[in-house]
Length: 137
Image 1 (tube, rainbow, N blue to C red):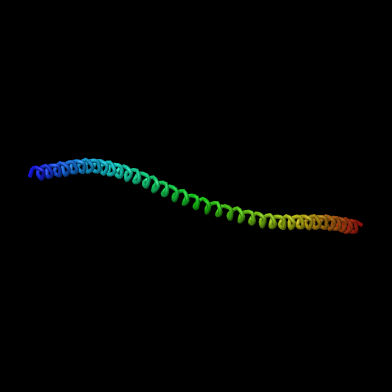
Image 2 (image 1 turned 180 degrees about the vertical axis):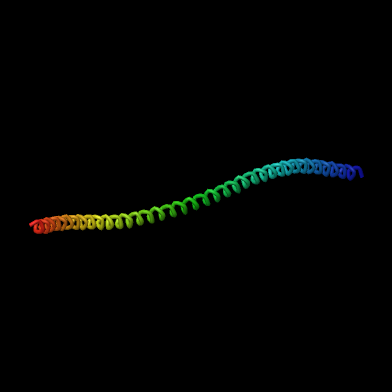
């Protein structure tokens, strides 16, 4: 009976040793799990910060793109306005040259008319002198 009590006692000691070993492992695993949870929380906080930065960057990028699109549109409008003004100036230059040519022609016509007028006035004076000369006789 003593040997069976000693065997049971040895078994009990073995079970207690195994229990203590398992409790030690459980405590170590619990510490590891707690550390993993802390690390997970830190990583989640870092991820949230990175996502916030990314969101801010995306919004800034979108705003910049909208500004760039607006500026590109304004540049295109200004180029079109410039082309329109250049075309209008070319048309005005053509019109001005035509009017200038018309003025030159009118000036020439006026000079011819003035010369004809002077010749006619000379003839009128000659006729008046002839008439007055004949009347005086």
